[in-house]
Image (cartoon, rainbow, N blue to C red; front, side, top):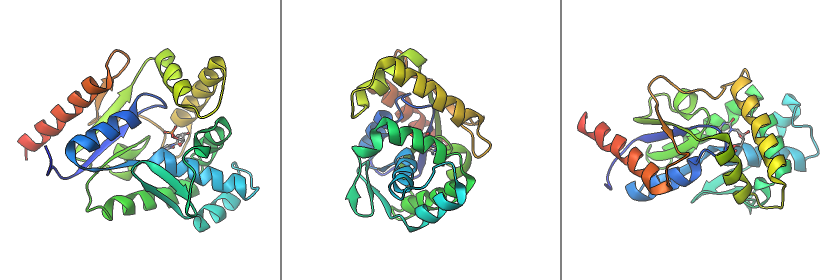
Length: 222
Ligand code: DC
């Protein structure tokens, strides 16, 4: 179904299957794919490298303003260096959750994410927590992805780039979920116009099929 144009917003908690789904849908439709979590992770890494505290807004904003964060084919770089492996560590995951709660950081990164899509002709599959609510509230297709917490823990443990105990992964996931949902700045929630897909018992092909059906439906109503 190449030739479809628009934004497909995929939001949901950590390890609900967003990245796998977004990559597949983007591949099927010949669209660019943006992982906005990678931006928050790279921003956190920049703050950590600068020796600043990820809870301090003013210092963090000053660092992130100077940081060049880029992404291509789902790989994130910071100041020209591919940091894809480093940003998937437990230390950076915790730090990313902190910087993502700072309104000043969100303002900078939301602006850069919109520009990223604009630079690609305004069409992309974009995944995160606030895509359908804040970054692209007029997205043509909005998906809210969920999965049971045991399944999400299993998936996140499998994608970590270092050895971590499953209990530790589960606890960290629960802590960060809570932070994503309860923070004042752009909390994670399902928009009324988003379609919920529960991926606990779905394989990636099935989940992709569900989204492509939505895209078909959206085209039919044009
Ligand atoms: O999706 P992820 O786990 O890579 O995201 C990393 C952190 O960034 C996580 O704490 C949630 C936050 N995030 C966010 O607040 N808004 C987004 N659009 C994407 C990620």
